[in-house]
Amino acid sequence: AQSVTQLGSHVSVSEGALVLLRCNYSSSVPPYLFWYVQYPNQGLQLLLKYTTGATLVKGINGFEAEFKKSETSFHLTKPSAHMSDAAEYFCAVSDRDDKIIFGKGTRLHILP
Amino acid sequence: GAVVSQHPSWVICKSGTSVKIECRSLDFQATTMFWYRQFPKQSLMLMATSNEGSKATYEQGVEKDKFLINHASLTLSTLTVTSAHPEDSSFYICSARVPGGGLQSYNEQFFGPGTRLTVL
Image 1 (cartoon, chains in turn orange, blue):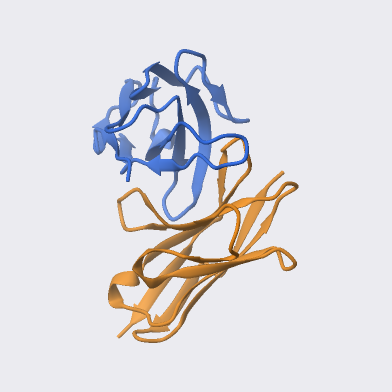
Image 2 (cartoon, chains in turn blue, yellow; image 1 turned 90 degrees about the vertical axis):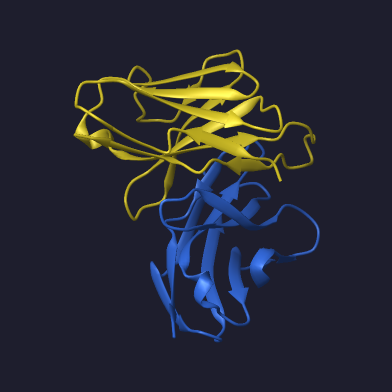
């Protein structure tokens, strides 16, 4: 069975500082990995995904994530936080039957 | 990117009534749609997988007689919450899978904006 663990339900960073949101996964098959962002009372927006190929994946809004198989991790980073980055972030894993399993989410707070 | 809509965006109903939520893929045909529910400050939990022209596949613990899913066309899936109760109050989100690809590729899912259901 697949699972996702997001470390830290809340993360606070200062505006302009590095954003690091941690995600570890468990999967019995080579996984597809995702990061989604959710703003209040809205649906999900895909930030980036890893399916195959290059392990460093670049997404929208300056975010990127690196797939590290040896560490079973897919941490999300952004060099410089912006106030508009404040939102809920979900890491997710999928296998080839396309079911997406979501982590519990991390709320990112940006401090002025 | 592909667009998925949901209607209504929010609904308030009385306990015991039924509520229907629509999920539409606006610019592509989706053979498969997924329904999720999200409780406040929690993650999304997959409820069921809806395949066009066939019965939905429900996740363990989801009552299929309470949450009726119909996927009558390639662009529309509906979720009906029957005899709704306050504990059914939640944020319901659908996604639609873009067809194509193959065994070695990933068919991306696109998410709707969600429907907030409040049962009084």
